[in-house]
Image 1: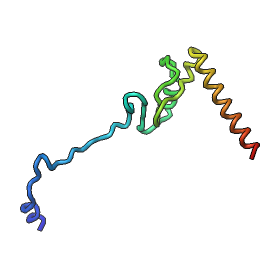
Image 2 (image 1 turned 120 degrees about the horizontal axis):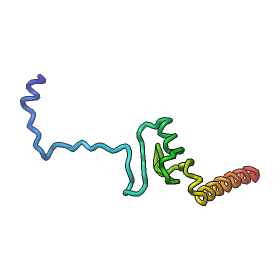
Image 3 (image 1 turned 60 degrees about the vertical axis):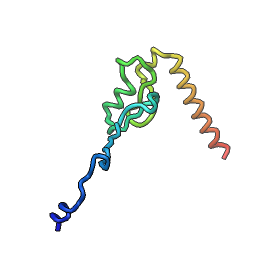
Image 4 (image 1 turned 90 degrees about the vertical axis):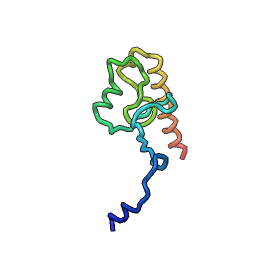
Length: 102
């Protein structure tokens, strides 16, 4: 029965074949926003958050979409580090004060 099926089945033409597309687990969205969905590791996290060789303050994240902070480069970028710290403190204070109002 299986051999009869193979013999009577019409041959597929090149137009009927479907392309197999693979999705890259890391790259950029619209050549702007970085993403990386490879399996994360502790070494990747350390390389992202504490990389002495990379002078950039904002670096592509080691897992997910967007950017992360290279804390090792903060002394080279004091203004950016201060602004990030001020934003974090502001958000923490706003969250704490909204909890008291309830």
